[in-house]
Each structure stands twice: as structure tokens, then as C-alpha cells.
Image 1 (cartoon, rainbow, N blue to C red):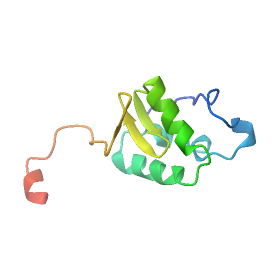
Image 2 (cartoon, rainbow, N blue to C red):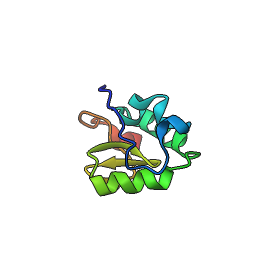
Image 3 (cartoon, rainbow, N blue to C red):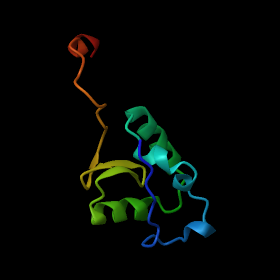
Image 4 (cartoon, rainbow, N blue to C red):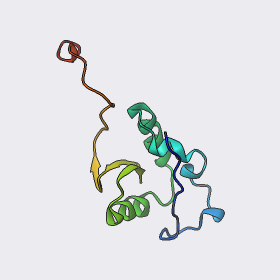
Length: 95
């Protein structure tokens, strides 16, 4: 899991003046595991700049991560991130 620095320069609130959820555990917002991304999405729900965050991510074409409470992949919002690797052979039986 890589750690990325978040660029707050284009958001309406300066990070030192706000208690933003993404500043507490930034690696969670760029996790590989879908369950961790769902947790990050939950943390965004009470964020005061949620809409601006998502709009900025789409405008910049962010390659991945949770932005504004949504999972963004290749600059577009996706419903869920698939786990890494191949699906299990018995996945059809589980679903």
C-alpha cells in the first residue's frame, strides 16, 4: 500500500483549519482492499467539503482513491472496486 500526499490547494477549506477525515488516515483512502475503501467512504459522510472534493477529483481525472465519499478509478466514479487477482472458480456458486 503506498502513501500519497493529498493536495488541498484547490479545496475551499485549508487543511490546517479543518478537521477532515482524510487527513487522519490518508492511506485508507488509497487502499487496495475494497473493505478499506468502504470504510473510507463512510468517513467522508460528515466531511464539510465532500462535494468539492469529488468535483475536484473528477475534474483532475484522479487515477484512484476515495474522493468525496465515492470510489474514483481512472477519473470516473465506480460503485465498487473489485479485489485484486482472479475471481474464485466457485464464485458463481457463492453469488
